[in-house]
Length: 532
Image (cartoon, rainbow, N blue to C red):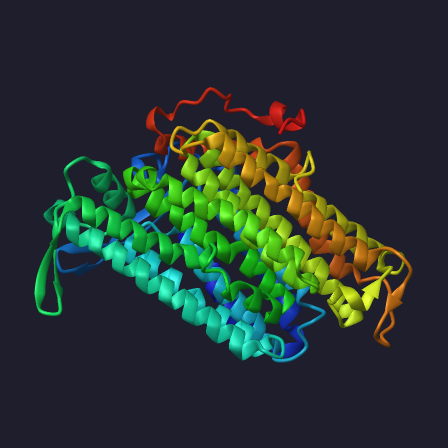
């Protein structure tokens, strides 16, 4: 009942904060957020699961009880964790607590409402990463949109209503596509499926000959879609539904507006966790339930990943707004996840999962640093400031460290994750001309170094200049503390990736035929040796 406890405690915390006076809301919400954080830490010490939960592996902290009947299908309260979902659950509770602390300075109105919505958002995110029933998972998936929309629209910048509506329209369209694809598969399975549990669906789909055709009525005409056509159509619907959330180019245009207009704590959660919902779902559904279609479509899929890497980095290079630079860099980083998943190798898929964790930590760190600069200078434009390092030394060196983490500095998590993606993709049989594709993706690192070094140099170094009348001083301790925690985790995962990579490998290896690789599972020596 650990998962139920997490959900209950987080939801109850939101209720408590909702009735608390504004002057107590910030500290109260932060204190209560330590409860799910401590719960996940305790669960980590007791975590024992092997294999992938959707392909017959062990499921940790599993609960399965019948909820209600939907026609012939049983809808269950089915929750649990494996080596893919547990690290993402940990990322969620860490980033939410850090984001709550970072909100103490910028959020000064309707504080009880703001912190209540953040805790409700955390509840929904915990549900997304723990739910193993299709209906239950979709309920949590959709519920995430509600508090996020209100947080952007209620506490965002001057164009917050536009950004919030754009976010909602794009993500709702993606939800419509993925809902159609999911239930096309369910209907195609026919009588071979009696419950809407995701492990049941995955194992039935992966069994040869289980998927039947489907009759579709189009403008009064009955069209029969065969099993192969159904698999392809469902895969595409699912992929583009999830690609909106990732986001993959060209479905990315909602992201910069949402990030720029959202308050800093919301940007931390949006980049650090919400984008991972898309890549997590791609791994869970497309690459687990329909691996044959994923291999058949390897060329266009990996092309989208590489384009996202290079195009996202190029867009970031053209920006003058520090926050927009970090926002576009997320598109590039998520492109590496797609490349790793398409590789269909243990280290490719494992590296993609580790990249989700690494990007969540580093992007959260960078958004916090940019937020501290904005809170102090009231500008994010590179042309309006320079030489801030002398006056904001802690913020400056943390921003520099985060930038180097993004660039893949050895002994930081970005290096470990990208190394694994490149190792896994270089010899991937699923990707034609894999070495060339990997080389093009690696070129994105050069562009990343360009825009991050340019942005850091323009804002932090050189002669002091600020085109505003605001006094510049050291950031308060409560702004620095969460950034130091995230930076410590980035370094810890860079020095010893096996802190999470062992459990990730147990979950992704069964997705690869035979689960074999010529590379050793323990990759700490390779990472620490600095080879890329």
